[in-house]
Image 1 (cartoon, one colour):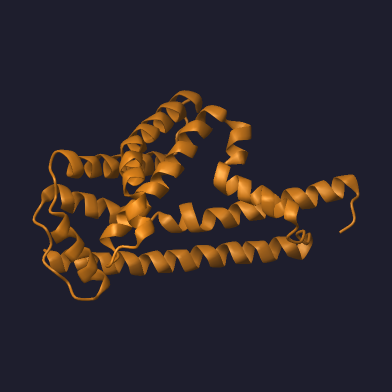
Image 2: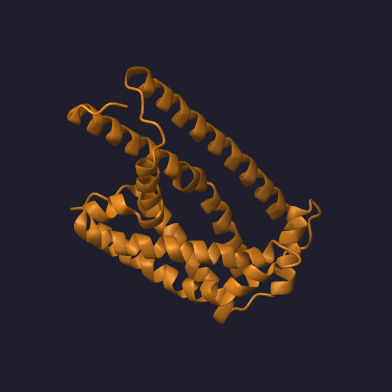
Length: 228
């Protein structure tokens, strides 16, 4: 079972890098096509600050849907803390800053499913019946992932030493026996599925925001007759 799960992990990571490269290549080609007709503005401090606000504070969403922004911003903050907390299973020895973040990551883990439920509620009530199945599936997937994580910590506690040994074995290309815990196997499998969404939802998102802001800056310059 451990070997099968390990091979599945390597396969998912391989697909992840292929999807990531494909997405970045698509965005790069699109940017070149747009610039062939209307050159994008240079990286000014104004543009950089706007993009940083879009990424860190979801400012574009705040301007269009403040109710949804509350849940999305809480989700992104808690998700980052939870991911950082899980670095304890990937690093040996564990850095001091990772150990310091453990209580914050644990607390964020309890807030994470609440933020997802809030997002689901707002989307179902505010989008007049239109809810793309792609987004719905991802939210349900993340909700299951967070709930299984909470259960592993509180009710059906996993052998953390065995879990870390299994994860480090994958990273070190020396597969170890997998903890025979159905809930852990489900949680780990859900992680692998979520990884496949990362290229389009995390790494590519800043590039999309940057391209959108560049187009806005170019449009503003043209409308107001500003010089480059």
